[in-house]
Length: 148
Length: 148
Length: 73
Length: 73
Image (cartoon, rainbow over all chains, first blue to last red; front, top):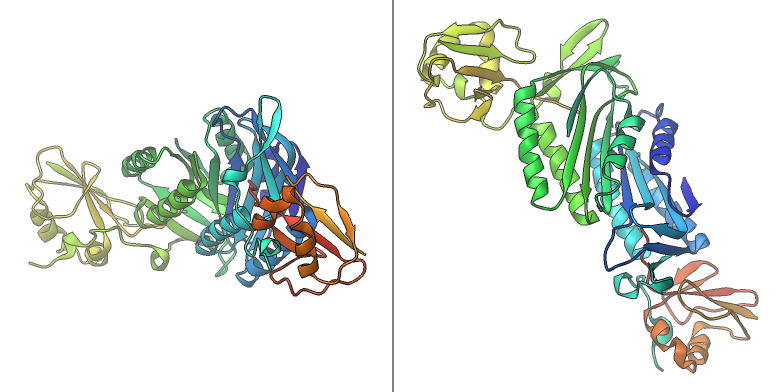
């Protein structure tokens, strides 16, 4: 239930597919989070690299965590270029009750931002510039830089 | 941006309409909450009464609250009967940043449950039974019951 | 006259009463035993604005609404 | 041999090295001045599992990946 796409996401189609996939599952709450590229700092868009093996294992661990609460998580993300006002990210929680769903979507999106192996670049004046200042070092980073 | 419908909501159509309405508004985060009728306690569905004048003023106050944070809220709700696995409620926040959107959707849905003038009935064996035990007295209730 | 409406699950027709404040309304409604439970758990709105005090003054043409416990969603 | 890959924005071709633990890798990579900033802020995975200690033993065929700061969404 991790979906990777080249370029921008078709948000209405994905939200519809996910809703219909779980229409018979007896979940009372469905909370998608949709992330859209904002116009700021003169960018033309964003671009993404994804390292799929670690993204998959990270996502699998979250599915387990959700399952313990009777919930499931779905996620879609773009690779490559996504232009202004297009969307690059959807995460969604389905759960029996709203409390768990609201809590999980918050925790999931926070950890996604801090841990998912995805790199963001600004598209600006024809260049692809790594967004270092908006990026987060994964927990445990820096061990190879320690001088003996 | 408050939408009331007779019967179940067409969730994919509403999520699509709202996404497209704001596609040029430069919001970075769109978080809908979708509430779906669960099979429990042998019900066939739920039914809703709405008192629209107070619902509208309650919703207007929330729009103001959202506006102060640069966000907007949209909401759809059913009147009348909504059967199992159909949806009766969607609330959505659009905001520039995810933090505000996640916080607002949580606060909004909590206050909705506690304050919005909507009454829920279980549909069970052909009857419409007020769901008193799952309902919440609005803040300030009971003043007419005080004995002099 | 003041119109009193009973919302949602309170199965009662509207009343037209000659009263000037909510305390008078409380005295009248407390005589109706079927309303006893609803008076304990209902909120009160005057002209569609919730009010928190029985001292609220009522004038001719006002509408009072009783809102029992809610459960949207 | 151990394969070392540099992910995302680190513009560097993979290396094939004859090493048996991450401490040896640190010594080798610290000689490359272009990598200095990345060694400070990158996480390390061995065979696609993040590791937190330089004592991690490496065997023939292992893959080490450097993951610089992330920003999905």
